Image (cartoon, rainbow, N blue to C red; front, top):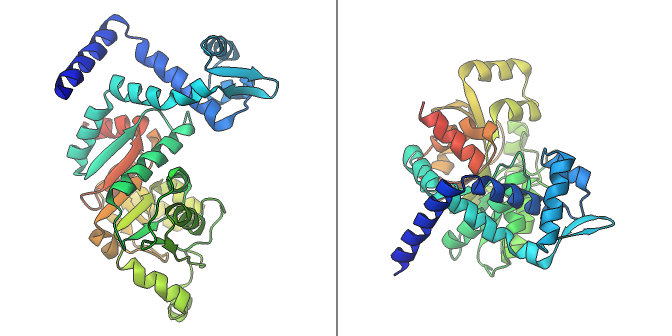
Length: 349
């Protein structure tokens, strides 16, 4: 019976695409508007238009329609969602998943990149930052399906992993340990590994350890510090990680952000570096070009981790995502629709 309903739903979607081909674009537009309002409310019309790269006239027309449908209210401080508007965002996301053929896209990514699983969220994180929260929720939901008694859960810092911790629902895992996968002192306080770990542990009611060291500490100084009990505990647990959640960056952006010397950056570019993850730079084929000079999970530990979860979105990260997935088979990839389509385009060349 369930298969019959699924088949009917697919036929209905195909029929709607044939008769009303613009329906998917219209659903996506209104999904973007509502999810942006949810993220930024109260938000002014001009700011909303700028955020979504739309004309003020177009936004005005859409706001009028959404207000007539009782999905938003226009208040003096700006536009806000109604209870009804807030309640349908997840439903719109599910509709886009069906209309845009994201299940087929996930299967293609899984097969071509030898993944454990691919989860594709509708939209483009570069155009609608709320998409990063949906990616975070998808990752958090997946973690809950694999996290077990006495597991060690490790996370890197970054906006994507911070979204995972933020979107995690409260649960009771008092015997799980949450640890940072890298040194915890960086430029952005909110997305430092230590802060992401602390928030995740709070949500899971789990134990946690922090690593109060810069991730590019001098190796000789690190050797001297490794015997300190609070540092030794973290390093010991890094050898027994069960679930590892990490972000992926572009090699050119991350090397500059990490103050890599200009000569080294040029060497990385010449060698074909496309991405960086947990301190390692790699090329499109997944070959490591620059060993990690930072403290944290090393590549041999990484290869042994049962559940490796990469989270990254945006068209410009497509090649970096391909490279990191080729480092080791069996990764679970959480990404957005724009990156997923760009990845497939690259793989089909």
